[in-house]
Length: 541
Image (cartoon, rainbow, N blue to C red; front, top):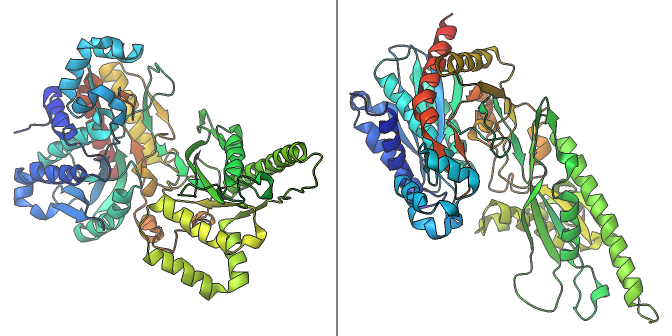
């Protein structure tokens, strides 16, 4: 008996998944994985083959799930990638209590249509959209993958499906990083050949009101460069006796925020410009002493350009900020100190990378002492990746004060490699199959976009599209080798072609997040079924 095939059945399944408020790093993120295990272990296929359904622990107590459905002695396997976590609901305001109850929220919004933006109100009144956190991103994709898994249990496909459901996609992708060795272990144990990975992230609109339908043959890359601004402290009564780190970081923000120099264009696609994701000084108690250090981190996306090219642009931005800081400082000092005998501090800001700062520290204190200091911080660590990366840089800056004021470029996790299978014949055939079938069967026009811009876990299993060497990044990443290791070997061992064909929704990470039901739960499952058949047919050919 099938229970996950009709639009109504899939809507019921989606609502049961959304009702788990699985915000990243919450207990419910653990509970929803256990729920998935519970509803799958009750199926006849897994009662007979319990070894094909497994929970895999992460180091922090969370879990990921793998569910394999094998077709006789077949080796050819398609991997279905889904994530179970969602972002928070603070933006829901008075609707927070309904954020995880899609039917109830949608019904309540019908009573308060004027609360919605115009486009969301139009969708609501159509009666074909379901609102709620996680409906679009990405529990609808998980729902459809469970539907495909059910078809595989019934013998629908001439190959194997392996569902991978992971936590923590929205923050650090620790779930997917933990899935890498699990995928390698399952492949070797079951003698599988991974032909491709299918992700179920929803299609993202290119602009408000975008009517197009998209599938993706790659996923955009993300870096998180940071700048530590290390100034010279002074008393607030002597403002020109030092250099305020807050002044430094403010000029850096002007050079980085929305800077068009970082927009990369590939074909008709382009990356969004940088945005600040964190900016603050590192003085944690009030006093009339100016902050000595401040930090800013920026979301910088890329497709094909190298880390070396990104570094050049980042350092150029720092150089421009330096010139403006010094000019502003001297201009204000000359005005304030005119006619007095007082002289101002004369800042000459040093611009360097983390690797250069590390070498400066080693030159002063020796490698053994510098590493001892870093190791002590690792042993005492009680911070997340971003804050701990900052701590490691600040620690080195504090013992190299003779070259301050300084601006230090570094990188923090998360890092998402840019990946693409746009030129892979296997994926090209799958994309053409989806486009042709959607047109012939439903009259829908699907368009191929090379890079999914919403970031996805495909970054860790797809073929990289940049010419970068990973070492170009990790040598500027303080946390690398200090409690964090990039799993290069296992990533390379399971790299496979990738494609993302997902549901239709709008407003991810907004309180108006919603899912369109007819395409997502009637047409999409049929499109994916045809694509999977063609993948296995082509493989046999």
